Length: 258
Image 1 (tube, one colour):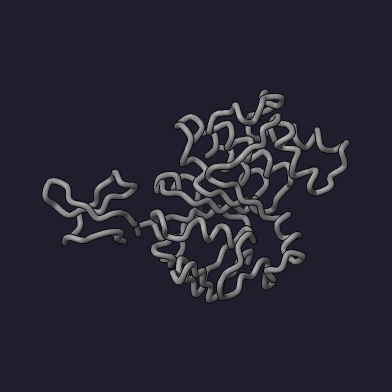
Image 2: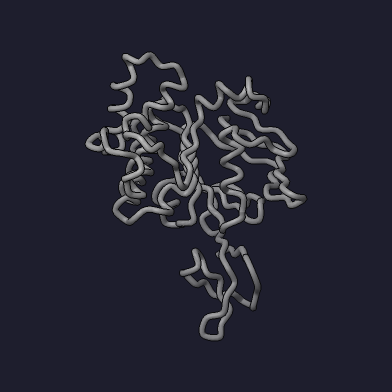
């Protein structure tokens, strides 16, 4: 098993944002983490990328308990890389941005150009090699961030809402990149998304989070949204747009099963 989680809790300012008695992720699959804002998706990714230590509980990686101490985490962070929803590029060239992780990892200078160019080829950004990072569009920035991660040859890639801030054309491109990464290298990929259709297109397994709890994987018929009233009838708005009728009025965030 790639990841095993047992009795994990994340508590901030007295509020429990994650409460996961048990959760598993197998190697070589694409998983989608679904759920409304505030459900704990980003927090879970930060734990799985070894950036945040859980308040309580145990995380197992490759069947070994993770020790959340800097020395023990360093080799794990070389295997698992998180691409944030709003990645930040340095105010320098695309080449220098992608090369950064290689320099930090002490990859010999003679090998870096090849690795950078190969990574940029994978995401269709080779032509932007000398472009300035601050001049890129949102979709281009996201693709360079993916290339920066790929150059370091991770075993696992985590994506936090990878297409939430890009146009439709870039969304299609990024989805294809994720699909090809899995098809070509069998890479394990976890991505958080609000987009149910994107999850169905990309993921082999789905985990729905609601108020910090997991409904479990492989569920196709569990949805979360915001309670509202349309034309005098109570509905659950999925992604604040798609209405599903409710049997009775409700308030706030709701979870429904069809």
